[in-house]
Amino acid sequence: MLLNMRDLLAVANKHYFAVPAFNTSSNMLLKGTMETCERLQAPVIIAIHPDELKFIGDSFLPMVIDLANRTTVPVAINLDHGANFEQVVHAISLGFTSVMIDASSLPLEENIAITKKVVEAAHAANVSVEGELGTIGTADDYGEKTSKKIIYTEVEDAVRFTKETGCDTLAVAIGTAHGLYPKDVKPKLALDRLQEIKAAVSVPLVLHGGSGNPDEEIAQSVKYGINKINISSDIKDAFYKKCREVLKDEGLREPNAIYPECVKASNAVVEHKIRLFNDDDKVKYYYGEA
Figure (cartoon, rainbow, N blue to C red):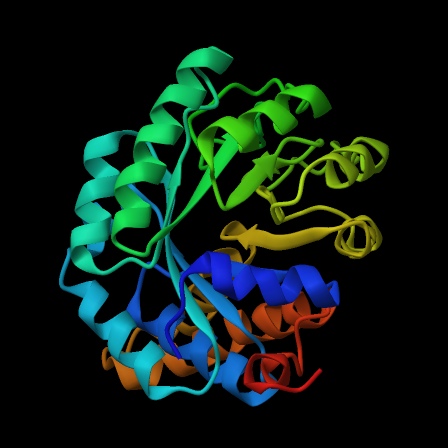
């Protein structure tokens, strides 16, 4: 069941769970993720970053849309960290049901202006919009190319931003970073700031950089009102670590001999995140169950 993210997260907001947004930049990750979500009856967001879209090509979208239309699991397809208006419009034309415009590195006035412009265009096509306030850090060289410094979202800015832009969801900076943290770094979420923002705004809140944070903090953030959590590095790390193990057998060459164990390893992470976010067995809420 294909939905936009506004409708998908409205249910999560009401019932206090978070829908995982898995970056699935290959058909193996996509197929495995969808099979796990169907088995666990877990709503899901398929996230694709512009760099990933450039690599896999526009023709990847019809496959995602087809899978979403064939399942009873609620699915949103989200452009992750759209950098400009042109990228967003292109994503809408391809069939994304949600787009993120990340103008968080700009001054607040400019961030509001471009996000508002995106909202006007997207809403005309029944596509939802995610904005971002504050700076989410970069934990490793594969993370988003942003500042390593985390600038926390201010409560008053969140109130103004959501009111003036009309965005459907808001990504907040409360201490996470993109990528995988070095072993000597222990991230810590500003859960008190999260509670203040949640009390002040009505739109669902999003946590980026969800890979690598302690499970107990992530679970607590869901209880405090996070409704969407982005996961990319964790599932890819599991997938490709297993690939390296499998490919030690130099005689293997067929994809159906190489990838099943890799998908299985990734799926274990997908299942763990779904349960951690309290997302399992939530499909029922989208079909009239109170």
